[in-house]
Amino acid sequence: GSVHRTDVIELDVDGEATVVEQAHGRRIPAVILPNDGDLTYAKIRLDARSLEFAAENLGAFDDALARSVVWLSLWDMTRDGEFPARRFIGSSLSALATETESTTFRYALAQIATTAWHYVDPAHRDETVRHVASSLWNLALNARPGSDEQFQLVNSYLGYGEPGDAEFAAHTRGLLDGSVVLGGLEIDNNLRWRLVTALSRVNLVDDEDVDAELAQRDTTENREFAFGAKAARGTAEAKRWAWDQALTNDDLTNMQLEAVVNGMTGTPRPDLAEPYAEKYFESIDGIWSNRTFHMAEVLIGGLYPVYADPARLVELGDAWLESHRDADRALRRMVIENVEGSRRTLRVQRYNTGL
Image 1 (cartoon, one colour):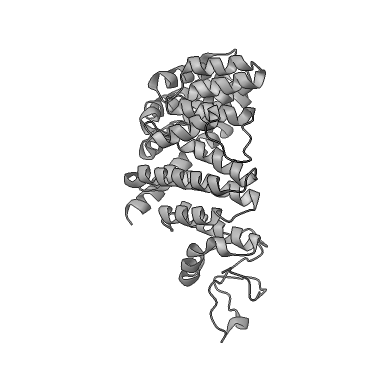
Image 2: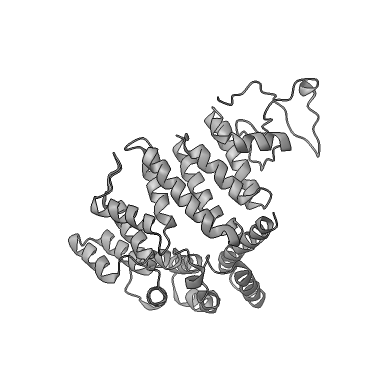
């Protein structure tokens, strides 16, 4: 029931093609894994036969490093528009059921989130997000009590709430008020605020509720959490407040500013992000001229409305870059990185739409 290494052939890849004499005449294995052992930096592609087997049996690889090399290859193909986004999600969710390597686990959850929210065909996004949320919750229920995997699964699950999702509301409210208990899961201060923010994002708590939560333990850290929770609310009014706070409230500390920025853009709703596509590019020059480098980096990097239409973001971004050819190189780099992310999203979405 496991996939294990049967042989290793050591060689250097040199030129466009490298003949592997040692493999001649031997039976083809289920998987041929280039760069086994992760000995060099490389983007690898499995042959068609190996790819099909690996995608169906990702979690069965008994060597953690080999498993992560295969997983990374599937991820590279997904983000390059060469592997179906929903199939990557399916393979990854299946593998998470048995994965115990913490770093691999954390990266996989982040990759699943990026794929679900940005790379799948927009026509299938809603059903994909619901499927991922349900799968993560079930994995959390079955995870070892008190384990790192259980904690990571719950934290990831909280990022998939959508307005009107009664199941998400019941789970999240239940964890917050104690009516839902996952054995071994400690609801510490940070996780409690993560729950409050998740409920704020789907409009199940308002600013008064956030203030009441803060009043129970008013600390510097909790004030930062409160700013983030208010900025995360899924309403146009909350986004206008957060945008204004980020750009005009000079009394915010660096950490409070970061909390507002992350809350502002962390709500996965295109309708709330769209109004800030043009505003973002109109605000860049003022931010760069009037803020410290660190704060400018936070604002220019963090206020980018990643959930807006990627085609519109690319159009606006290319226009800004064309009109700012002589801008500071550090500033252009920040903008280029954001726009290239949208360009990739657009390209990968089009690939998945065409499947």
